[in-house]
Image (cartoon, rainbow, N blue to C red):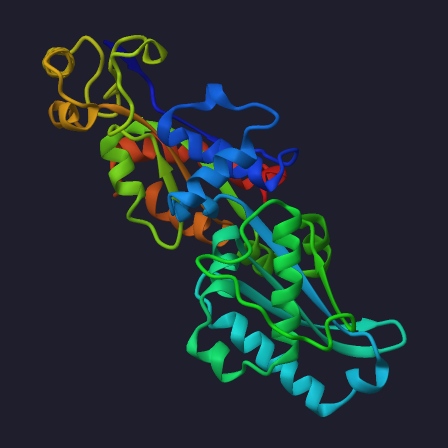
Length: 343
């Protein structure tokens, strides 16, 4: 039996590709990080896609900007402005895309609307693979069609699926006249105010905590989660040290106290029962029924900075679970002052 303290750290993945970001998060579920190589991301993500494990594609954030029409006569046309407004409406209809409209000055064109949109890989893939009623209503919107074409090419170049579950093809005669770009977070710092930045930027946090705390974390919406799976993780294996790991209940019982001794004895018995069930031929998913809330788990939580501010406000208050405060209060400082973690 192993007993550890809970912890949380902010992910910094600036040097990882989109596929590598997805792989590094997804392997937490299977505790197979040791299988990561320089060439493992693509086949691993293809395998997850084939199994329709779409949630793992929520662990990479993308930013795009619609920069306008490249011909001045059309850019100043009222009809053009109307379809740009419609384009924003289509994007806003997808609940997991974040949209900001800004009036910006473009050389030789003048003042026109720019549209910033961000979201996870899955959010974009579902947006172009599952047309909503509003998309069908405005199916002749050439800016939307241009964006779908641009996004499909971008995802294909990154080795990603070009629409979950179905790839939709648009015929777009404006394709070469519309300008879309993939935007970096640094560019968003320049062009958007703080409130807008926090709506578009996302950050991931890796928690090592008790199952009790993880049960509370997954109540938050809208966020993405991936967690170490007790269905697949066999704690009798060498990679787990052939033992079950538990989170020290220091938020409740001081080590050495009578309460702590009762807890420790209970954990030892749970581990003994778990190993006995495995020895009798039970699978990890059936043997886990004897494991308690104190069992350690790893979970990655991915959300916008706007949502993190809300979460931290709730989970650091005196009314919050003491075990939750134990991980959230140190995280509060790490997240807010670590701008390099913004994705």
